[in-house]
Length: 214
Image: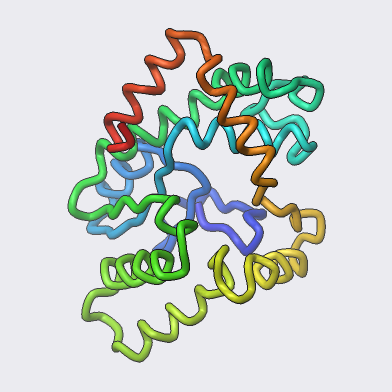
């Protein structure tokens, strides 16, 4: 689907020449290949970090009613909430791993951690993406302009994410929900990850292995 800034007004016309999908799905990649030559980029993240982050995000009241969080997540402490969030996040994480497995030469997987580690890593990752998508189809000056325009999305850059959130707010003011979380809250959530049931830990462990996180 194609979407505007802020992720709203999703269009279901699948043959759009440029598409954005907020979530990884193997079926989407396979379908697009049937429609013709393509180049795509997918972002992956450590599944256990996704669980901890999702718990913290939804626990503070963001996106109330999301199926990716327990219905009572706001009343759950980390010891109960993180294992419960692992259950509700499972389909998202499994979809990501399945998409990663079908990523061939026409899909570039990049790691979320490479965007957030430092500005140097952010720029290196963006340069990789720009080169992969455009190769020799645009000039080096155009590539540099694209890279410069991405600086608003650099968590560690001079703007943080404030400029990006300002742009989103112009389209949908209610969407100006900062997706970054308090470091102490995230640390507490990470400490509760080992409390996930053994079977669930094993399932997550297999997906981490598939994507190179273990």
